[in-house]
Image (cartoon, rainbow, N blue to C red; front, side, top):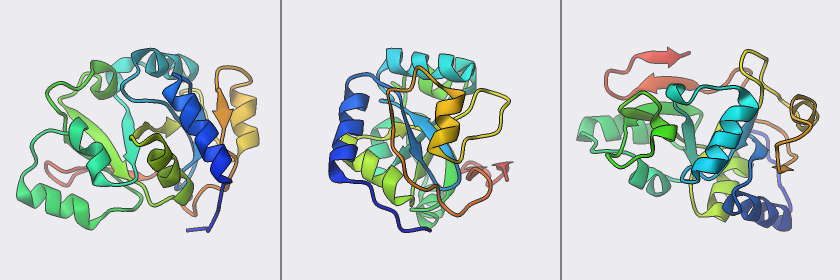
Length: 189
C-alpha cells in the first residue's frame, strides 16, 4: 500500500460535506470511490443518480473498523465473523447479513449487505473523520471504467460531486474482491 497523506483540514472539509448530505470522491485500494452518509437517503439517491445505478443492486459500505459497521449488519455466526475478521483491514469486501432495520437503499433487493474494513489510509481516515462508515461505489457512470485519478473523476462528473479528496489510489489493479461470508463463494474476483 502506498503511503499517502491528506491534510487534516481536507479530511474535516470532506466530513462536513458528508454530514451536510453531499457526495464525495476519494481514493480506495484500487480506484476512486463515490461516497456519502449511508443513512442519508437523499445523498444516496444523488449518488445513485450520478452513477445511473439502480437502487436494487445495493451498495458497499467501507469503514475504519468493524465497530463502525456493527449497526448495519445482522447476527453473525462465530465461524463467519472469524473468517471475515481475519481478512481485515484489507481489500476484502464481504457479503454479510443486513441488519433488520437497514434502509432499502443500502441493501437493495437483498437481505445482505456488502461491507469492508478498508486498509487504504485515506479512506480509513475519512471514515474516522465522519465517525461513520461511508457508502463506497466506484467513481464512474455505470458501464464505464472506474476512475483511478481525481482528474478522471472530474471528467466523469463535472457536477454533482461536492468534494474530491485528491490522493493516490492503492496498489490493486482491480476493484476489491467480493465474497459471500455465507458460503465463501466469490462474487467478484
